Length: 70
Image (cartoon, rainbow, N blue to C red; front, side, top):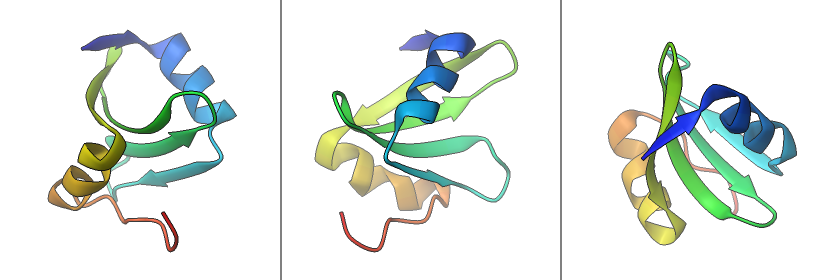
């Protein structure tokens, strides 16, 4: 699902945990209201890829490090 970049950056700022791959393209965030979410950041928008346990499952596939304690 496409997410406006302003909305994406708001979610990242409000997140209690933010993990990013080495390229800065994939983000795993834990938001207090939305929970775990995995995003791909593009040039004009971000793309919501997965949420909850699914986000934690897929994060390593995109080389996003998992948090120490989920």
